Image 1 (cartoon, one colour):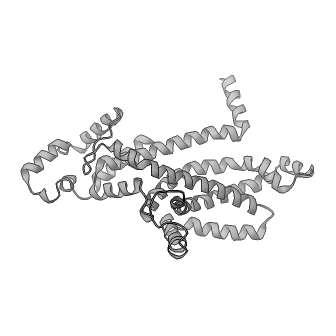
Image 2 (cartoon, one colour):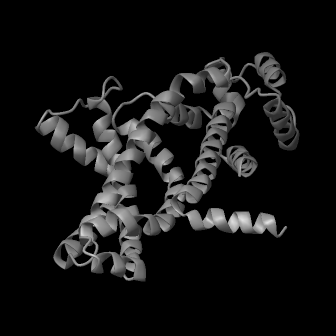
Image 3 (cartoon, one colour):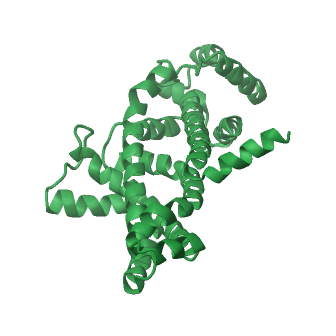
Length: 300
């Protein structure tokens, strides 16, 4: 996954219009001597295949290269901006989980009216892009009510609206899946037996049905990690936050290939790590998977 993401990004950058050398030289792009020197220094005279192999050779040594524009190691630039993006992503993920669980429990059967209203609102939010939700939140809660700052990264108040913009669509999407799982779980014999013994419907949902309904939501949640990162990068532009968003936009506009490749690689690594952790969470949520794994090892 990591290799594929970095490779496809490298191909896309190479196929994009414009020449990197013109970006590097700026107004001096017509100077033939300087042009030849810069091409040689940055290895731009090599074929794309050679540049690709050299890049991965450096990457295997832990070297992400040097920014064409900033003239700083790419690893330093990422270290400066990555924490702010991770902070926003974690806040958005936490909000999405809380929202999904709350909506699913409150609107799963037998709440018919609340379910219909919730499904309509969920569909509307899921269909809206995060940056549009962010602008709407800014217009209401920052410009009109003045409850939250318009831009910046300092303090909890500054991360509330960006986290809402990124987390709301994911939370509404997960709520739809989790609700269907709760409905199926409540029809199972264990849920009916618990209710027959006097346990309330709300307690059955929380104690018994939620664990069974969580596996499909966890699977989709792992796939939604990319949307969380992508939404965070876009919303950083809307809310004027520090992070990978501004770094990525500047790198794309200036065709700063080392930074573009590093951001794509970093996103792929985060995705792989999160999905691997979710595979481990499956074993905690559903003990049957642990028993199946042990049975397979015993018969191997």
